[in-house]
Image 1 (cartoon, rainbow, N blue to C red):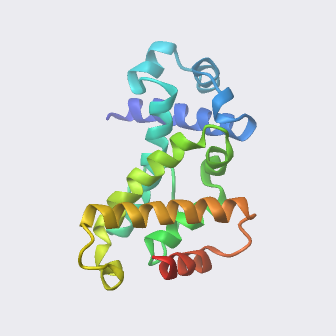
Image 2: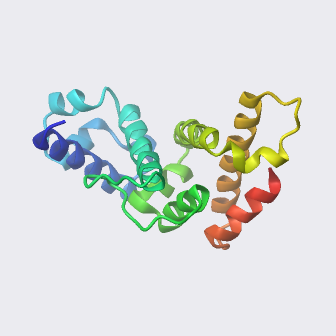
Amino acid sequence: MDRRQRKTRNAIFEAFIALLSEHNYSQITVGQIIERADVGRATFYAHFETKEFLLKALCEELFAHVFREEDGTQDATALFRCDAPDSVFVHLLQHLQRNDNNILQLLRCRNNELFLGYFKENLKNSVRQHLPLFAHRKAPQLPEDFWVEHIAATFTETVRWWIENGMRQPPEVIAEYFALAV
């Protein structure tokens, strides 16, 4: 992607993020996004097929950020920047706690199942990379794909519970609860 395309893509992301701070995801239209981003409709669709693809790309940016930080690489154009902790799970929880790019709005909206689906799918990729962390808890007869699904579902529901209960505990404590639960 060239510099101009990255700039346009970031303008669309920023417009979407700003709208998320004002409206529920389900109420945001592509028209509002392109107006806020000051781009044409064709330009929007050259980058994203639908609003759902834009949401998916935002989720992928979050996860790509977490995993780039984790493997020691960084992207200067990333939407998410921070000092990454040792644990990928703590890292994700910290972004949620800070409400980076209004990500909590996506979790709280009526259509949050779409976001949670992307969240869980990306999380499963990370879980696969971190299976040795959970090896001592896995029963030998469990297939690996079932175990990955179980861990990702447990973490997703842990995040949902944490948010619904006002995020009173720090990310490190929630990550510890999660580790004890799987």
